[in-house]
Image (cartoon, rainbow, N blue to C red):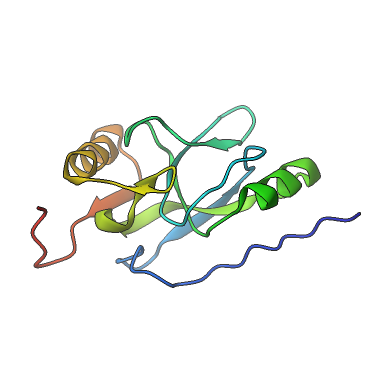
Length: 131
């Protein structure tokens, strides 16, 4: 069986809030579901994306929902999934392993991006108080 990419970009939430978002591609981890907005760690030697334990240490943000079955099929076929590697993103729409960041995690994720010098900026939308 030939596996083709069956994951398409959508804009069904307000994850991207700036212009000039930059995308890249990574290999998924077998049997791992990814949600749009998940922050992920990308292995520098294998280009494989995994979920971090906390909202720090990440390198990219998943651009599209990927089921565990899709991830398994794509990993086996060597087909990569789309991620954001640069731009401005809504911190309220970011998550770790499908769980939206709470206030403390948003603060950690935003500080990590700044301190690590990432091209990813997690922002609070203008006029929104972080409660």
